[in-house]
Amino acid sequence: MNPAPEEITSLVGREVYSNNGIFVGEIEDVRLDLDARAVTGLALAELNQELFAGHAAGNTGVIVPYRWVRAVGDVVLVNDIIERLDTGPQEAEPEAEAEQQTP
Image (cartoon, rainbow, N blue to C red; front, side):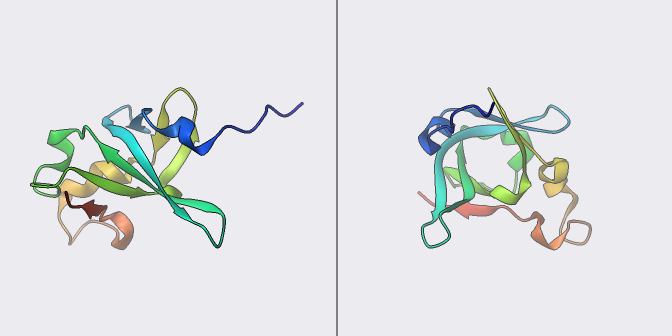
């Protein structure tokens, strides 16, 4: 038996962790593609400052592509690619740059 689908808004407030258990941030909002009727990104706030040092300075949050999400439960798990943001552009995958939100 399939559980009842959850409302998209139920994601707001959930903590986001990498597959390796590193805290990434807290979901503040979701980015939707209304034509495709799909979630395309998670807007995170309360960021792990160590993880985003140099990438989100002066910004209130980041948007993580939804394709990075691996599991949704009490917390949201994303690919460990998020941990590689600090390796620099020469080693990071092209899609590894999280989009930045400005205040």
